[in-house]
Image (cartoon, rainbow, N blue to C red):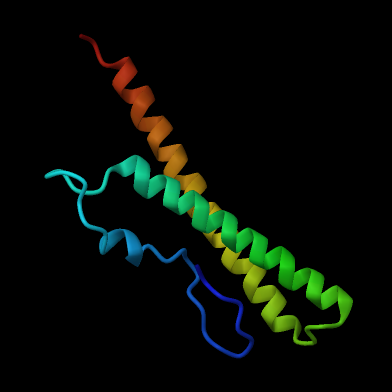
Length: 101
């Protein structure tokens, strides 16, 4: 999970290195649904962090608008990534359904 640390560079996309370092459950490795669930959870965490830092800004606890904007953009980019992956999955499914048997 990415932490909100003012003044430090943060990742724009969710951090998936824990998935890469997981021990495989079987010989196939980590399954795609597990990766997608982790992406959604990380995106949700980024959205929550962006909301929290925006709330802190409104309350006057955070005075740097740049941190607020960066957190909001990180959450937006992560959400866009998840939505594009979802759209590609739907397109692939629809293409498979159109194939003659």
